[in-house]
Length: 275
Length: 275
Image 1: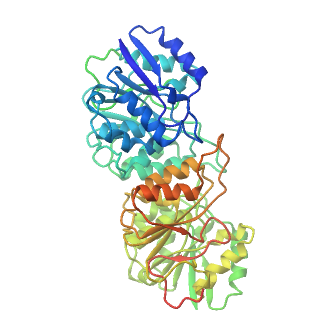
Image 2: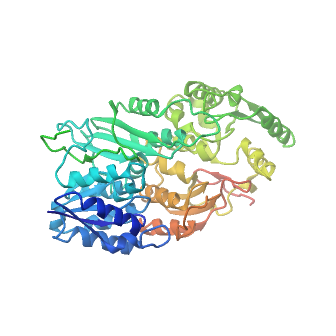
Image 3: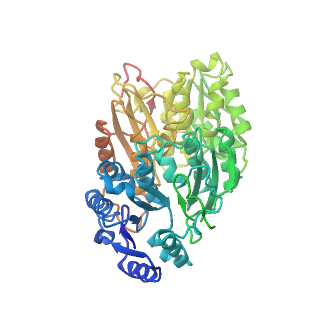
């Protein structure tokens, strides 16, 4: 049995959504979910104060009864606790998988930098709210149960990979949370940003990606209309900044803020995947 | 006579606004404005392609007939040409003042890093469109004519200062445009960002400001309503991240995306100001 603790390092989750996720999990043999009560806490923007969110994450991470910690939802806020969180993990945390994406990327990054357990870009409980979101949630549940078919299909098992929301990766650069990514395939995706802002984020993020094996572009979705067209699409923007920094552009990645978002275990994907 | 070349390193300016600015300038003895034709060029989001904007900036900067270069407008785009621009300046550029703010901050930063002339955070021709904007434009025209009364009132002539839009400063960190700011008073302002995004920008920018003399907060204006309150105002956010990085928080700065935006010459303000 894989026992999974769920907490909310960023923004609050809803009890009715938790019930739906628990019902889905009941159909997956070998996986047992435990929502930490903090998942439902509210303090202004956040799922509880920094202290409350940090304490809940540490309770989940340092409890030997759990094999994995799943972030309920992104939003914003994991960056405020990630450095303290990593500093206070004990040895049992090193055996765990950490699942999430979007704002959860700050924690995934910090854990990967510290080489603690297995950070995994993966759909979150909050994806249950999307059209088709049950498939997204089942993808993570399946992965936790040992099914690798939900992994991003271009993972080759030879190049270590990471996946981030572009804003999250841009904000990580130069901070104490940023892992070294030399030799890595770096996948990025974005949602709800103007294309000029995507260009600006690439300007910044690409300056922090020297030495990577290459960049793959996930979906850039829900781009708002601006008062005039930007003049280049997201793929052209990615190619432009990769060329500026001599970063190989490696094509598309099957990730995004959507129900089709695939799973990217940080580092080398396990051998013998069946995808 | 101070001769000022105006170009648009980011987004296009309008001819009717240029006419209004020229009319204002006619009332200021000792200042003569020359709009480069590129100021009115349009190419998608930008005031001409990167090559067109770069060429116009270089024509203004490397022409010995001009004493200053004034950026017509921000928006987005100066970051795409700033590195090439600085690399291609000749010796006459070193005698000039460079005026602008917002997206123009990328060029101000790159010029300050390269110690070429005098970068100045100052109202731009585009401010003519604001309510009260004539005062903002007159403030820069007056400064060009030698009147220092429009400078930011807390400049003390002892600590070197810079002023940036917070997003611009955050995006500069770790890039080849970022100047060393050790010992500087760093002033920041922001517009049209959610408070959670302001918090995220401070998380990032403050990680790149080690060794500064301190931070001053300008106006954080036109904050959109979010679905729930953030739980802290901009001043509390600034104090939080300054405390996290042991950066002295030095109070308010009289800058912002508004008609009252005051002038901040980068480095040490001139002695004997009459403000």
